[in-house]
Image (cartoon, rainbow, N blue to C red):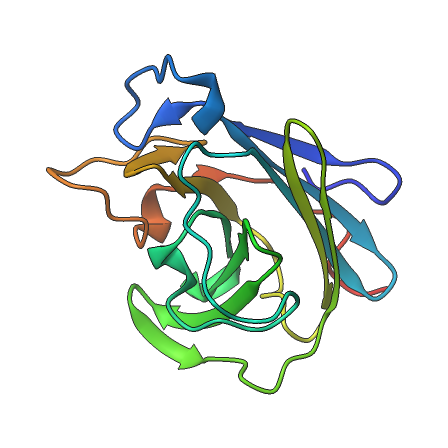
Length: 183
């Protein structure tokens, strides 16, 4: 359930993508979701990495292929199987992609200029993005969250397969969504 702000749904990302425990706390991230009047607020956080992978782009920029760097991702599946991928990176970058089916991109949101905040502290970084209701798929039915950092792939909800594949929306964690429908 995605509660209305100031409430939040917290998704701790502390296991490898296949469900095996990850003993390395510096890889443990989290995603927090809150519904708001205009849409959805998503916050991602991750400890600083020993050898951070950050793209050479200005803070706040949209970066294609952000998953090639240290990133926290959240996938939201709406009614009918359409889904949204939101990535927030360790350097204050973002990427938002919409899909009509697994790996079938329907919108790259290249002109999207979301409200984005990035903070860094002694232990790690945090990024918050505001997504307009029009970008979020209606009727959230499932979700998942992931960390890609230090050559590792972690997941909130584990996924099957011989290698990490985050585009398995039919296997994401079921969600009851109340507050992102009609205002």
